[in-house]
Image 1 (cartoon, rainbow, N blue to C red):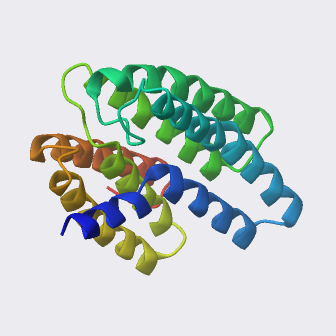
Image 2 (spheres, rainbow, N blue to C red; image 1 turned 90 degrees about the vertical axis):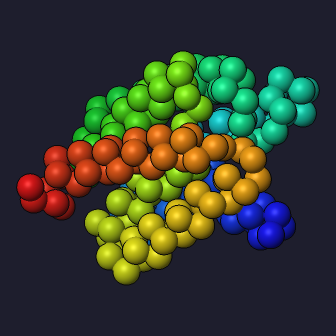
Length: 194
C-alpha cells in the first residue's frame, strides 16, 4: 500500500500536474507563438525555479524531503514561491493575456498566500488544495477530465495521509482552501452561477 501511495503522491505533485496542464492547454487551444510565450513564462518563471529551489534545499538538508512536509521549512518555500507568482501574474496582466488566464493565475496566487497564512497554524496539504484547484481549471476546458482529476485528488488525499505527510485535519484544510478558491474562481469567471 505504501508503494501505491507513494506513486500517487508523486504523480499528483503540483510541480508536475500544473506545468503539464499549462502546456497541454496552451498548445491545445492557442496558437504556437502565444502558447510558447505563456508556457515559457509560467513554467519557466514559476515551476522550474521552484523545482530547482526545492531540489537544492532537499539536497543540502534544509528541506527533509521534496514535498517540504515540515511546516517550519515551508516558510522559506512560501517566501520563494509567492514573489515568483506575483511577478508572473503582473506580467500576464501587463501583456494583456486572456482574462481567464490572468484570473486563473491570480487565484492561484491568492490560494498560495492563504496557504502561507494558514501555515502559521496548520500545515495544510498543498497537494490537495492545488489539485482541487487544478480540477476546477480543467472543468472549464473538459468537464469529464475535471471529474477524473477531482476523483484522483481523493486518492491523492488518501496517499498523503497513508505516507504520514499529512494528518486528516491537514488534508481537510487543504481540501477546504482548494474548494473555496475554486468556487471563487469559477464564479468570478462566469463558469458557475450562484
